[in-house]
Image 1 (tube, protein in one colour):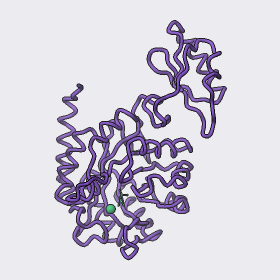
Image 2 (cartoon, protein in one colour):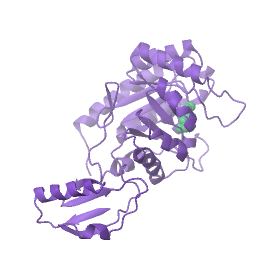
Image 3 (tube, helix red, strand yellow):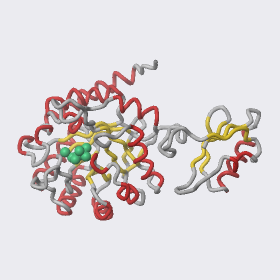
Image 4 (tube, helix red, strand yellow):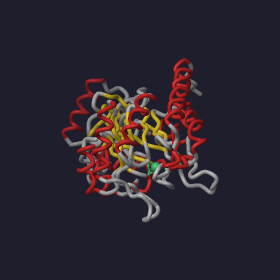
Length: 338
Ligand code: PEP
Ligand code: MN
């Protein structure tokens, strides 16, 4: 809901109106030009007429956007997520690196060291794997989460791992800092609601054929259920092209930047499916303004138990991070506004 106010209303009068709206259990957010955007609570139905009698309100309109808490209208400043002393988003660039799946202590420990040396802030590794085939490696489960936690702690890294169902959330939240929702579960609404109840930041991956609005509505579920710490992830979408595993949609970075305040990371590993594309597309994502990258690395990429073709070596990761740093430096000095 948008309330257009009398342009002659003073700041004090707008403030008084905001207080009144808060007492009515709304979250008012002041906009430029004497406007107030309102967020209503989950399941709360409101009629426009309810606001028209309030002092200073000239016009009441419904918002075009269906998402509210995720919208820039309600939160003009970029969100910076704080997690165990690390800042993510809003100018704090962050890289997440690690294997597709946690396979052994040696593998995850070596990956953690390489992730830290390359400049990553977080270590990724799947313990519950959403595999297309039931005959493929399904992940190490809780044992894997313990290995991930220890490897991350040894290198001072945050950890990221996927949860696939509500019953895994409480367990994973005990071991992992950032909980990932995979592309296949972006619209698993019972999972999203459960993730609204925890404090961990959520890395929400875009579904294969989800529009930006679908992605933002999925984020809205988590936000509306109480967790404000959502990171959006562009990981490629399904198109008619079969040369690459997915088509990495870098438009998403620009579009989401306009639509939302939430941090946006790009996954060039799943977005391309091809090792040799990961470097160039990482740099393109940084140039497009992504807040972060998530990249699959492995001590022996060809031996990865999942996603081997898109997994890169430690050396390749370190080079991408150096190059990404140069691009960020270049962008800092010249921001193009059209
Ligand atoms: C992953 O991160 O390993 C993964 C399964 O990603 P996605 O859900 O994007 O396919
Ligand atoms: Mn993977």
